[in-house]
Image 1: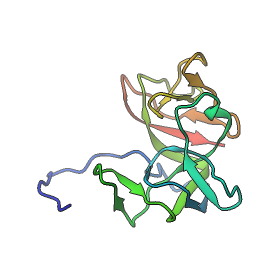
Image 2: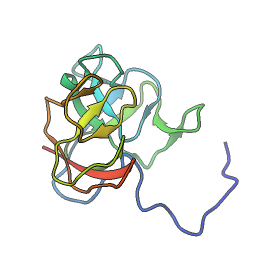
Image 3: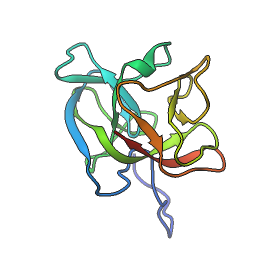
Length: 156
């Protein structure tokens, strides 16, 4: 698909973009399933030593999240027009560092980031039905938002 429109100014950030050059721990794993978009939570795939798959909407996903898909300069585009890692490609998985995420709603800097099952986005709402804690890594908001949008999180 070719680009048909141009903007004078780029967006300040996009989901999956590294926030800075601080101490980032990024590993490379294979995409087990097709189209893992940038900035999404991932869990281990069938081959737990080599593969990841995007976290689903099923209950219990928060406990399975091992990292987050980080943007690559080698961009593939899914059939839906979304920049994503295609099946079997190498996925940059952030295990520690700061990056931009999509928020489900307004969030406050310094709060714990939880996983919203239905949308795959992040929220600072308390754990409840449909909102799960991310337990294998610690995730906190570095910046806040006034509504749904983009915020920086830090993963430790």
